[in-house]
Amino acid sequence: MNVYKNTDTPFNCTAAQADTLDRLSAMRKGSIGSVRGYKPTTDWVQVPTVDLQIITRIETKNLYARKKLALEGIDYADVAEDIAKHPKLAALPAGEALTLFNTAKDAALASIEKTATGDRDDAHRQGHDRCYARVVDGVKVNFVTEKGKDGLKYPVLTNGLPTAESIMVSYLELNRTYRVQGERKVVNSGPKVLMDKVIESKMNSRSVGFKTLSLKEGNFESITIDKQTITPADLIPVSLNMSRSKLVSLLEASGFDADKFLHLLG
Image (tube, rainbow, N blue to C red):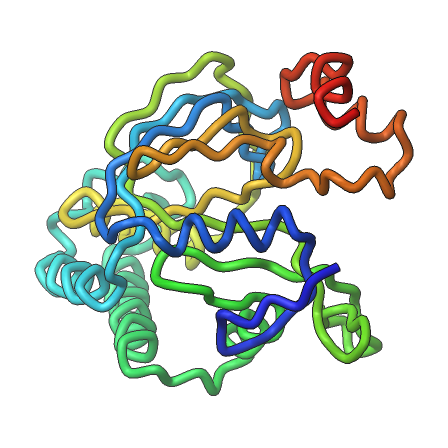
């Protein structure tokens, strides 16, 4: 393990992860790139496989300014058609639906303002600060965590430092092609959550939707940005401290010929 120090929060990581973080950090802001064979896992029953065209290394200050302008311009009439598509929202009395919309919009504006001004005093942001470390704009890591007695997640410390679990790249999506469609989890959300999603969708359609890739062995084939290509092999430590069988499984899951790769390693 290495200690990665090119960040405000030093952490443990493999040499391969450290090299990948340095390469991502050196890429130009606003770089256009592509991702092949990405498999998102959050909120999916059947995981899809997608190819993406993206813009990354985004200046988040400018992004949130655009989102705020887009959100301020949304009124109830703009979302009425979307509300009608959700039975739980459509069933609300008109006055109650309007109140819910205004409350949700005000909360979303307040959240954007807190992010823009660096206010981190709420539980959600404090949890994020515990479990993630920003490296540069558009690149961060999430840590290996465990639940504490209070039910919250905390980093697992080794020699007093957290350890990187995966590298995360934020991006704006230009295009998406499904190789495998996948199937989303059906969530029985209440009116508040549904209204939040309606407003967020409308806001993203008027500005930009900010998303995040979580790069780990086995969940992508390659990401190419600013003429540099990163593959799962770049995240696998070349020291064979892991068992040979585990390394073979990781390589094969990532689409590599394990015998040829191991032959190159000697």
